[in-house]
Image 1 (tube, rainbow, N blue to C red):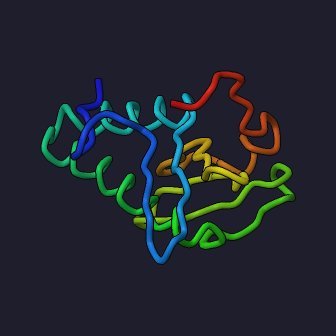
Image 2: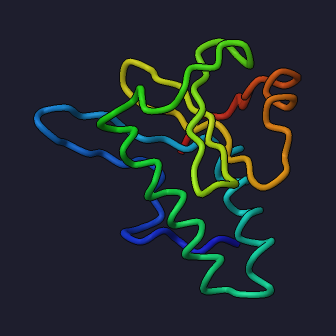
Image 3: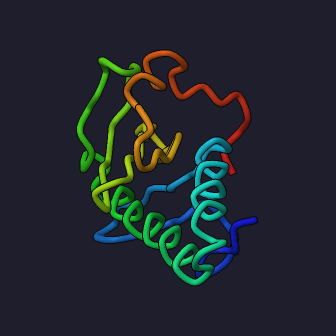
Length: 128
């Protein structure tokens, strides 16, 4: 199982900068994706596994202040935006009136476009 991120296990992050306040929420599928990334790297390098997953989380935080940072991809799923990072990770997310919802975290060779077109980012459970 993925170790807790620095600063606690909470998956909601509240940032306040110049009066702007938004929540960053990870859907259950996104958390499962992060766990899978950790599990893939961990046998070879546990420290790198934890730091890589933490780096992904850290790179999502600016979305709280700049929600339009990712490119709109309505062709994949209505309202979805894509934030590429680290040369091999793609983070789809949605902007809502109260939160940024990270819906998935795709890595390496996953065909995220086909997955999002086929399944959307449907996750019927409430984000953590």
